[in-house]
Length: 475
Ligand SMILES: [Zn+2]
Image 1 (cartoon, rainbow, N blue to C red):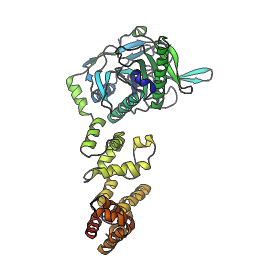
Image 2 (tube, rainbow, N blue to C red):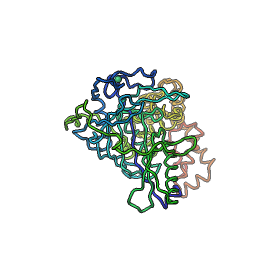
Image 3 (cartoon, rainbow, N blue to C red):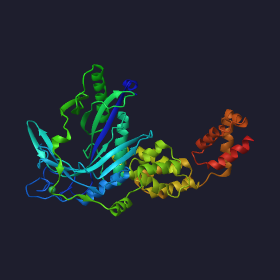
Image 4 (cartoon, protein in one colour):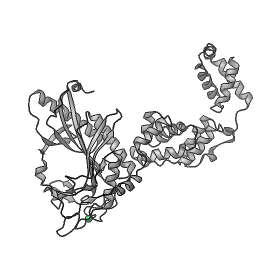
């Protein structure tokens, strides 16, 4: 908790731009692929040549509706494209086609772990602008990104700390990825956040004057920028200096927010209905058929894993962060008596070999979920004890081959009863204190003895039998 938090409250809302994963741009057939030589994914429509006419990509509407349904929004049957006029070289038309008065989705929410709901005011469709490349004195322009479809997700000012902002963006990212509507990669610019932030004294209900920090392209920079800007605004309030309504950028090297320009109001953009495009009309039937395409969402998976499978919340969050990991887990756990084992093995030895987030997102370990399940079934049925099974998994991960190849006769053949009984007697001799404790009613002491049996048999002892013999000898 920051030291200002007992006296002041931070109030923030987020505007998040997500590039949609459609194959083609929003109003033409040009490719949306990231990268590519500058100005090779362009045509007269996305370059804004006189006489060219836009045509709305229906996939964009479908993706925006999916995002709205997954965030509990109302989907508007009537929405409309508008022109937002501004003159800047990243936009050759000198206007952006967006939705102003009639957005496609409104009034949704995303829930945080602390139970608070961050309300979503609206989600609207718009086109992206080109990129300016600064090279020494000169500025070059790449229009490949011009006309790439975006949705902008705007929250109410419900966020009260940088950590809540981070969690909200992570949840949103997860939902968009599950839906397959955006890859949500901040480092590639396919997800970008603007933060509106003000402060007020604890207990006040009116909002203070706000500033807008533009284009946060990483979560850690967003958190730092919000912390800095909160402290800056508080220090102005303490000095009775008014806070200016302005647009800021975060200077990563200096760790400071800096003024870019005065804040524009809606009037500055002279919005008006886009004359080249008809309104976007949906029917209840359209929405119902898009709803059919909704996958099970992270929130629902969370409920199911924690309540039905009894997987601890922290492990569940790791399993559901990427859809590919969750799907792998479900295939590997299918039909097992104890699905928790599958979770532990994925989060333990398998994750250990997949250290980066990018690799986890793709999630393609050398061992397939079916191969893992095969091994876990042998473990569950008692055909292979725990330690050898773990060693076999490592070999499978090295080679990508199934467990059959690595199971030796020694691992499969159970210990003879004599050897096991001897190991149990040995353990009691070596741990007299534990034996004594058990006799005095401390049933937990049996665990220590069992551990000793496992160590001396290199994990080959069937746990149930070992427990049975230990109890016999202790009585
Ligand atoms: Zn084009």
